[in-house]
Image 1 (cartoon, rainbow, N blue to C red):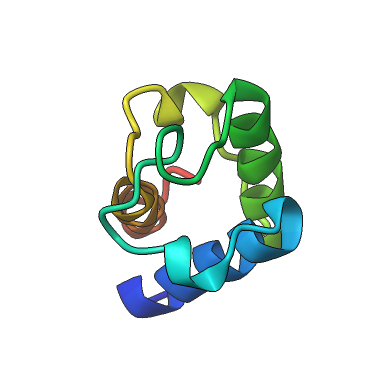
Image 2 (cartoon, rainbow, N blue to C red):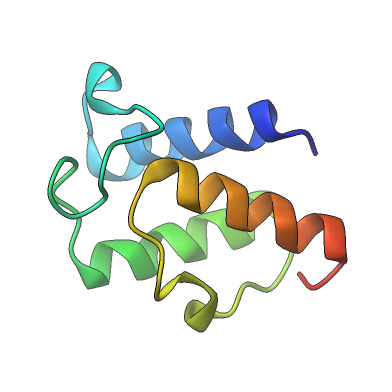
Length: 84
């Protein structure tokens, strides 16, 4: 899966799950400050990404994630390395 596909999947998930306005979702948007996601929301997002990718994602993989681009990059790295 290419980075742009991952980013679009992530964007779609944020809109669907949390009703984040599409215009608010940018690569630099901070999950907590800009998109108003809390830790429970991030867990829900991880579960959604697992459903979409069909792979197991460990929540620990997301502890240092701050921005939308961080999430997309991490998913891409894990898919490339075959860890998820």
